[in-house]
Length: 409
Image (cartoon, rainbow, N blue to C red; front, top):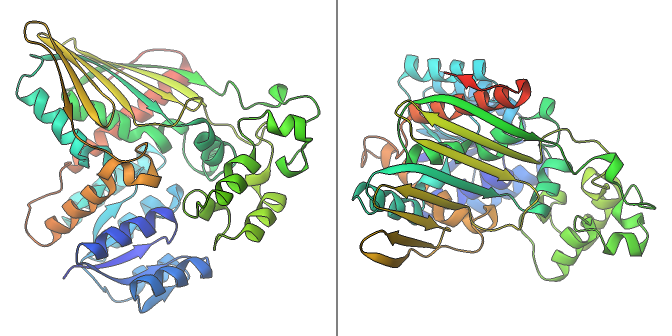
């Protein structure tokens, strides 16, 4: 039986713990500074070792083979290096770290210690991803030449996480592209492997700015005039309280108030950041971004990460020498130049977000990690070097966006 230490008892730590135990692993320790969070996870999974500080957990005698790092982005490097030096293999939530030098430090520690690091690039681990990858490998559209990929973050999801939430200010977390879409760039490399020669990127903070605040809007949604609040797609009342009234209790409500109660939500919306008007200017990350990649052999790929969108599965189009395929997380629609059209149904749940396990990617990642720890597989699906390369491209894309130039690798 694999034994796991979980650092971070928020949404991601809970999801990974849940999948791990369902697959036969045991959670032997949990660390989180929030007593209600760590105690809830400990009760749910029968955890005996509970820590208020993740450093205390790492400094304790090793208590398992693996560790889950689901801490805030800025703590990933320090925790990952310390855990590997203590003998743990890692399931590491993305990003590896919020800066390139820190990513390099994690890579150096992995090479030095020989530990396994499974980065939570969950898009690779879905049945949909495996079906699309197999189709391309079998020559279903000939040789793939170009990819167009859309990450529709969702208007209310962006408001929750990137305007009001933990990732709203780059200096406190990560750039939008790194925090949300590093695994989308990884997805492009998964579908279209190879060396990238040039990177370009455009985008920025367009909509969630003080000058776009509706006339008469209150600083908090619960204090906003009804006519203004009801006309706002980003109303906290709509996103949280009305969701509660519909019976929702999980993410994102459990981020706003824990445990989730009507009274707790209302108090949080009156007192905390999740009840603030999205136009106050307390955020600085991009709300839309385009990335273009040119490979050394001339192939191309592009990513659109859109905060102003309807939340749904990511959509990908791959164009090849004999046809094209459009995937939407549930189906692959193939249009072959000679053989005609057909559809492959690969399933998929909900809209492919964290609420539905990223279309099976969360479970697939945990299953692969546990299999590798138990010796049933040599490594997880994604080699760590490929995850590092995706991070490198993400940082270069940010450099290209900020400097207004094409970055040559």
